[in-house]
Length: 391
Image (cartoon, rainbow, N blue to C red; front, side, top):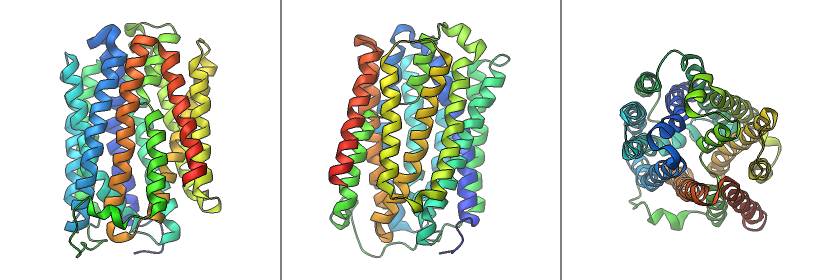
């Protein structure tokens, strides 16, 4: 373990995350546009189904892959293969001509995250001294989101000149580069393999009640936390552009770039200053920003300034929660089972994503967007209450 938080592993994981999210978010911001073309009026339901099923499967897989990373010790292969799988899944979107093509490409992209994330988070947490875990995660998450900023920004600049499908094919390049960086630049022997024989689920009894309560809170919030692609879709509708105009103007993509810029700044800042305020306070702040955004989304308006505010609020919320929940989990889970613990946290987040994406997509399609976002705000409020009671 190293005393400085910005060491070779932290820097390498940050750069790999930058490249990986460059690939994923470039595909992600183009996904609503492709879904509009492929599915038409059923786009919200198809989008919700694709993201929901993919994130749900990935969530279930993160526990066994986290357990494998704990029992094998050598975690480099998990991380590299995960990036390669995601890169392929993102690029496959370029071939999509039917709704089920979108679903399967999303499943591939999300499965890659299931393979790599528990091992990555475990090694990252063990690469620095305990007091520096939050800055290390803040740095990694900030570079991750910087990639999520640059990828959509590149799409924004090129969309007038290059087709959506060609841009999707190009996403494979940074994704493959991320996997190669993991293979050649990271130290995969930071955490020794656990000598105690465990099954993935037997680890549950070794987890603290505080961590289990934390998982319950994050499940409630996950049920509210709809995919950000729904924001792009809603902005498309209320700003009055049809799909073809949206593609040539790139308005919604620009708003998504703003969201990720705010998220990157928030992640790095919170990572540095979170040690001066309790993790639960930061979690509450993230929930509040999300709830305010949901309240605004219930109403119908066409102001670009209000839309910018919504994307900024969601960016702040995402930045706070992505950094804080990982740092908090590292405090609550013992190092020998940390990979499994991070796998469980990711599984909970993904189970929530399944429910939120499918419910928001279906409710939006049949009852309207205001009802869908009211549901999300109500569930986030329940999570806020549970945070005060149980964690």
